[in-house]
Length: 82
Image: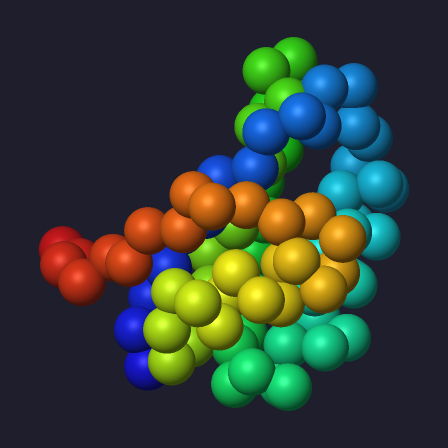
């Protein structure tokens, strides 16, 4: 499995609870694509959300996010870790 980090924009003013609800929408369907979302981080001031996931491909991560209602084209594979 590959590791991915994705970035969402437009989450200005979102609360922790709202982020948790969005993350849970991903978790509810992630198995459909063989993806697992490990964690999500939010900067409510900039409106940026960052998600860490493992899965078979960038496209699989993008499909789950789109189906969960928060699509993003910014999905980066992280092939190097130290």
